[in-house]
Image (cartoon, rainbow, N blue to C red; front, side, top):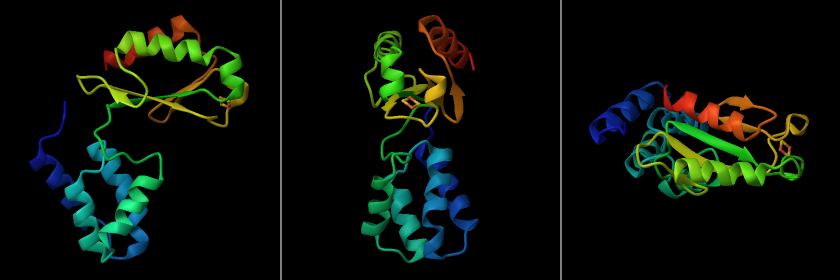
Length: 158
Ligand code: FES
């Protein structure tokens, strides 16, 4: 379920209070907000800049540089499917298509219920496990169509 703006604002204020107002805390603070809010709302970036004394343009530069950050709400579960060379040779392209059909979304899109976001990435550094995807922080190795279906069903059930 998407967070109400009041909840998001409160979460951001709690995170702000947990850090000393030093510019070196910028990335860690953004990571916390991304984790708890599942994206970086504009209001949060403004508050981070104010709290740390960092220009908003610099906060945006960091927020848009790292793939781990998103300015748009992401799903509770982010499926990062590797389509690097090793995974591609073992059929990751077909897996991505199957996931798209199953969830009704394309790459970089989020399901309407806010549960899943699909991303494709280039090499997760685990080529021996190809084809592989990461759901949030959990690796799922040696995928095939039926494994992908079971994994998605398990996350959908919570
Ligand atoms: S190509 Fe997929 S993990 Fe390296």
